[in-house]
Length: 269
Image (cartoon, rainbow, N blue to C red; front, side, top):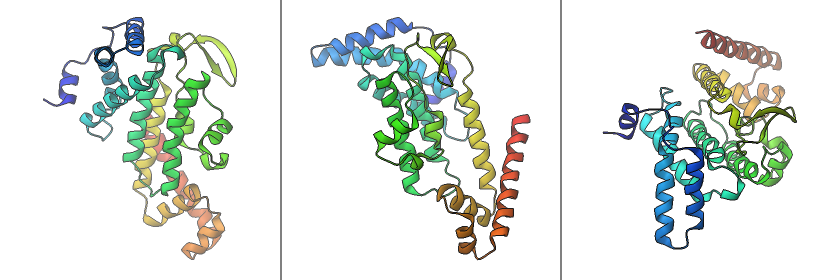
């Protein structure tokens, strides 16, 4: 029986182990003095959290990727999270849950490039995701674009409109206030546990856009790639394709209109 089949047959809400109990296990693991003790408590933390990782992965099934792969990605992310977590930074799940989600989203980005994206752009996107998580734990908040660019050693413009920068999670303590537009609200991260995550809708929107791009003819794909990924001006794109700049402008406008219409149709379905 595959991991996915086994998990789906017994899928329930991960309520068997309380967050406080998991934190106690994590502390015991961190304070273990011998290698045998570390292995014991590490295995107990992972065992307690596997249902949580599986439930996160389950939310991403049915999107065109093998379920077994998604469960494996989530479990590996859990193991890495256990090994690098600092219990002095706050509750374990406040760090583990967004980290596992981030790994799953990276998996989808790595496996669903519909337009040929230059390798440097992919590398910056992937590095920015990992770096955002590290800075979030260090600062107790999401880093600013300037802080992220400084840590990566790149120009802030190189981050562009990176999906990692837009959808990075904030691994805060559960009693930390939720912030909007820089101001704290009365809600806390813990109070929002179990609420619908708007990130899932963004993933669906991204996948719809990628499907729409995949259906475009090669010339329209090339125009999108050169303008949005290579950041070339329309004049340069026109020269490369040996057409007028007016034609490029019209093709771009029409292509974007098609993609928007596709997203609206899928959203209404």
